[in-house]
Amino acid sequence: MSTQPPFPPFPPPEPDKDAIINRLFKEATRDSLTGLYNARYFHELLSVEVARALRYKVPFSLLRAHLGNFRQLNEIFCPLSKNKVLKAVSEPLGQSTRATDFACRIGEADFAVILTHTEQTSASCLCGRLKQRIIKKLQLPEASGPSAVSLNFAVTEYQPPESSDSLIKRADRALYRGKNDDDDLDDGLLGVPVRV
Image (cartoon, rainbow, N blue to C red; front, side):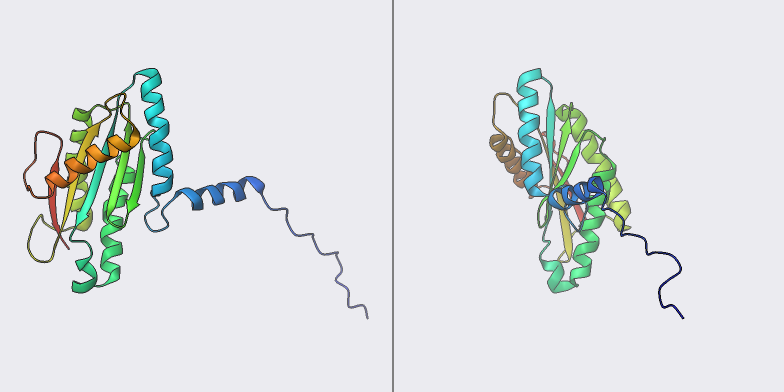
């Protein structure tokens, strides 16, 4: 009796080169936890947007978000709570922006969104919508206190001929000025205390 199979074995399928390239690109440019673009790709995208704004005279804005008191979640709760908060922030950031915008996680508790063809006024309106979506996503009321994690936003419109580094510094200054203020400010800052 023959031990060979009745049909010859099929050769292994050829790897799909496009799928491999897409997977490698995603791994190189995306944050593994949130699915947002990572910090390295953020800096590349911002440089491209600055060059576009200089050449074509089109506006764009940079939205920055920072989770304050974020590290205490490990002490009060557990790392899973940190992941829950990160996902609750990142999903609305990714879903509330247009296909031409770029939502990024640029640090442990830091986010940025490059809003193409957007002036500061429109970007500030987006901050208000994001605030409501994030609070709803966490299903928790706005609050403050010893176990509160604060979420602060700042919006900065690009001012030619500044560099991308200068824009980031202006956005960071606006962001940290807003950390100590719970009220909406006229310069695009929003303080959003969220209890976890």
